[in-house]
Length: 282
Image (tube, rainbow, N blue to C red; front, top):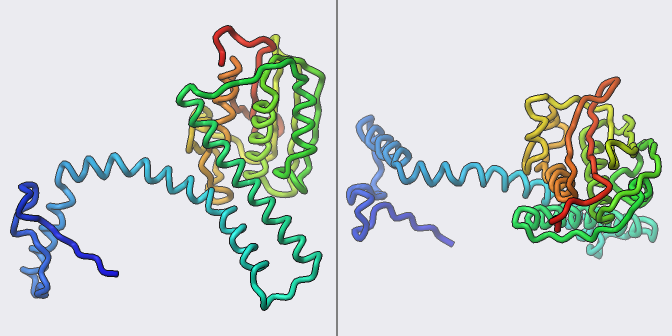
C-alpha cells in the first residue's frame, strides 16, 4: 500500500501552486527556512485552524471513550485466543476460569455500551420509563447481591424501606453505576457504604467511599459526559459516562444527583428521587 500526498492542485485556488512536494532534497539553511515557512503557513491558515479546533475536543473525548471500551475488549480477545490455541493444554478448571473471565468482560462492555445508548436517548428525548411502585432499599440490595462490579469488595448496606414510583430497572442502573464509580476510584481494601432512607418526601440513595474528595469546582462537571472531578486520572482514567447517566436518569424521575464530602473523609455520591413522578415525565 502506498500513500500519495498532493498539496495544491490546479483546480483549487485555496492552495498556492508553488506549494508542492518535491523529490529533490532541500539543502542548506535557506531550503530549511523555506520548508519551515511553508509548514507554518499551512498550520496557520484560518480554515485549517477552525477545522482542527472543532475536531480537537470531540476527538479527545472519543479517544477517552474508546480507551474505556478497548480495555474489556482486549481482555476478551486475549482470553479467547488462549482458548483457541491448540498448542496450549488447559485443564478443565483453567478453561472454565477463562470462559468466566470472558463473560465478566463481555458484561462490562455491554454495560458501557448500554450506558452510552441510554445517554444518547436521554439527550434526544426518546428514552421511556416504566414507572411502578418500588421499594428502593430492595432494589439497592438486589444490585449488591447480583452485580459483579463489587466483587471482592466490602460493601456495607444500610437501608430502610422507602416506596417510590420509579422505573426499577433504571434505579438499579443508577445504583450499579454509583457503586462502579466508587470501586474504580478507591483502593481494593477500602470500604464502600450503600445507604437508602426517606428524605423530603422521597428516597435518598447514598454511596459513600473512603477515596479522595471531589474538588468543589468540579462537583457539577463530574456528572457531565466525559467529566472528571477527583485526583483519579492516574488511578482509573475514564470517560465519566456512568455518572452522567446517573444524573440524567435522576432528572428524568424528577430528582437530582450530586456529590458532597463524606464525614470522616472520602466522597458521598447521592441521588434523591421523589415518591411521585411529576406530570409530563416520559
